[in-house]
Image (cartoon, rainbow, N blue to C red; front, side, top):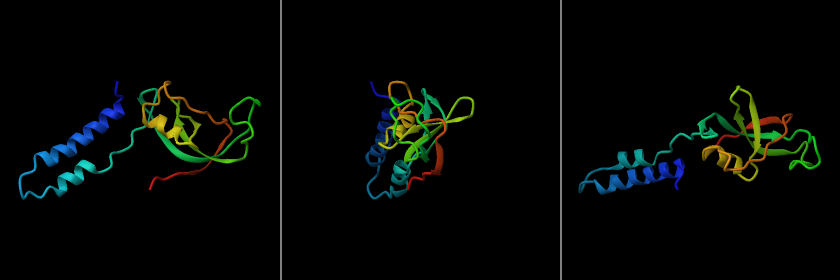
Length: 130
């Protein structure tokens, strides 16, 4: 079953296809094509609810237990996603492999795993997409 993101992408492809299919001979469809392909705003979600998130770079905080996945990474710089919690605070998930951003842009549900970063990790900078 297609998720909402896949349905949205199909809808965008259909919009572009309709521009070409409905064009009259000699018609200038430049503005319609540009409208069909212009980037759409990125929607971020957590547990399938709209929720603010942003790409950041962090200095990894301390590891409470040697069995945690981030053991040995204390003090290193990593890509991460800062997700706004329901109470307004932010928590950080790892994005070194792109999976953190993928999660928040594909519903943010429990069906997509994530790797939490320690609560004492520090945001070094915000990442801007080009």
